[in-house]
Amino acid sequence: MKRWLSNGIQWYKGQTWNDLLTDTICTMLGHLNMNLTHSSHGGVQSQEVFVVGLQGPYLHICRGFFPRDRIARVYQHGYSDEEEFGLEFTRGYNLYLKEDWLEATRALSRLLRYLLSGKAMVAAVYRRE
Image (cartoon, rainbow, N blue to C red; front, side, top):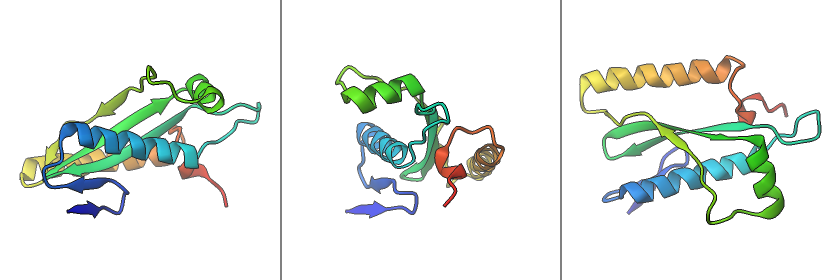
């Protein structure tokens, strides 16, 4: 049985790490595509994408950084099977443990502060409608 969380991450009982990575990168690429921004110089901008996910009782935060040259190349020529994207994960915080719960809330609050700081390269935060 699959469940959808409010952040769009799909999780289900028995999910493997490979499934989690696949879901994470698909979510990141979808958000990257939806929020692709062009700079005033006519090209695309480098982007960061963050995903907060759950696997069982474990919460993790994942960051993907997509440099503008790679975005432009993939956008113009398509994605190659040899293309690699680096993902950075926090450790898994076990939400059943008080210490991990507290660390997870600190990590989430740091992420929120970063997103609102003006230094984050996340187009969705600054989109004006």
